[in-house]
Length: 304
Image 1 (cartoon, rainbow, N blue to C red):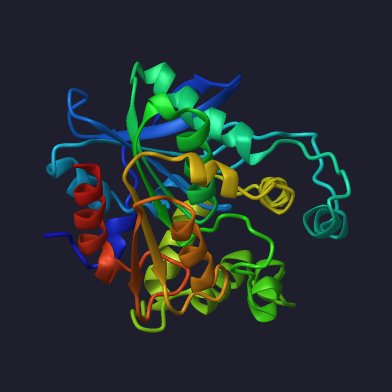
Image 2 (spheres, rainbow, N blue to C red):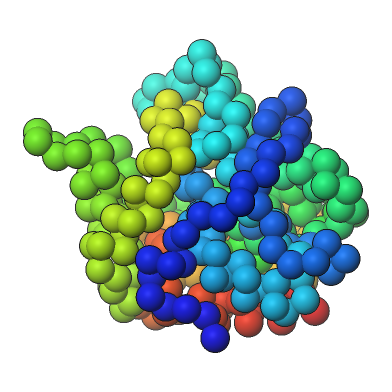
């Protein structure tokens, strides 16, 4: 059974480094390399520790070789120092009206990073599992590199279709929220994460704070957050890519997700033939500790 004490689930373990797509990436592995690989891709400004160690071990116990890593511009992976993201207004103009805007890198670049990590590890094919922005990256990787994908699991993510799954105004403002006077960055982060979290699966501030402190301790890069956000906001929709998928696909979404509403998950599933949509009442925009055992079961079922 998966541990649910919270704090232990966010413990870091030995971190290794590898080069991919011209950048250095921090990664960790669980299980035997001889087993089929699962690569876990984290969301916007999320480090690999958002995939709890107990969850990774659970997947490994189901006969998978599990890889988690820090995306570019976050944590212990390479930062794109010196490259500035366009303003939010310019990003919105691109997403709403198609007005060209130059960004430091794209979601396609991040998909290439992911496949490049498999290359560097000598892994020919993997099950792609991503949450939020990571789900978008995995959708692209599965479609653009079809020979590298066994299956896709897209968690609390979207197809990028303009009118599907837009965040509530309050959720959008939370994503741009800065610490108030006298408030620390960690306190601000805890407040944001609790706002976006799962009302049906509450977690204490102390557990959220432990995870935030772990991430800040590993490496906080606010400029990287803006660059990753720009990659999301300026990305074309992925409907044509999803339509091309011919692999098992699992879509997991929370009914109470304020940042990427349920309509986004429904829309994503609609565009992937024979996909499976699993909706969790009470789940918001996070991975509730109480559901990790079930998530592992679903991912393993989709991968078999």
